[in-house]
Image (cartoon, rainbow, N blue to C red; front, side, top):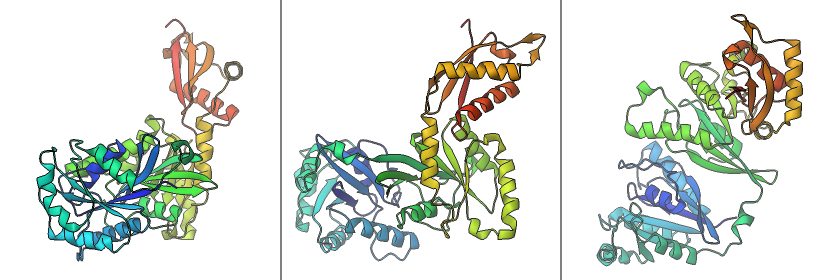
Length: 437
């Protein structure tokens, strides 16, 4: 296991900016509004031959009765319990506040090593003055500017000096599994499904839509393989996105779906397939993203109505019929056991390579069984077929004139490829080129 470093602190001291700076990615949402980060975010920091896991947590507010704040506090407590080092972040511009003192005292009681990062200090000449108040906390400290990168290397050195030695990075990345993300509208049960699959309360769940704002990574180990699940913010219709923060969340959710190996698109069994679901389906189909549809909340559908409901979803999802559909319940755990094996099977199909000889035998058999229809007295002629790439598989047809091929005949050719090579789940990209171009 990698050493585990947890970033903690009160709201709006720059924890997420520091997290992004250390992992060298814009993974956590940053905003000048306090309380943007709510769930734990996970990343890996690499420095020469050393690595450690870094966890960003929500801003801590003690003695707050708000339910969301209580959930944040619970999330931070769980992260601290597993930590090898706690990085307490404070604001060097504001100076030492009473809440900083309270948090430092609370973290001392965890009996875990604590290092102080005095953030928002933009130059070495300002460091002694900015740090002066914080020495009273009795913690080792480093002054940094996460926004401008000042002294980040010094902070890294201080962190590594307090962590146990680890082996080469290659050893840490063995048996790496797939990246699997949950995508869907708000409140369809994405976070509940992730918690059910992982077997832990790793992500905040609330009946209030929009609780998840960041894209949250959770690692799950199955059969000696480590899978990274990504919980994303609910994707609303554009007209209902009320502020810039939620707009960032939606863009981040769509971006996360593109960096995943397989996407789980979560639909609500009770609301069937609504317009926004169809837009997300069209987005995934257009981008040729491997995805599996999870129809969640089946525990709320009476058994007598489930057969009819399945027929409704089969009809509504007909335009992307290659996508597998699993009927699930985060409450009863129905359908959850097969999610990872199905994702592995889908991913394996995405990697397939087919020889040109096999493909051209397919073309010969398919065209002799069903010739391309005449278009204005002319008929398309397919000269040969080759596979250009995989993930997803892309097949290029060289023809006399691509405009002579009707969409219905292209669909016929796709069905023949799927049937012969058993590609029933992967998205396919078919390209038709003139043999003279």
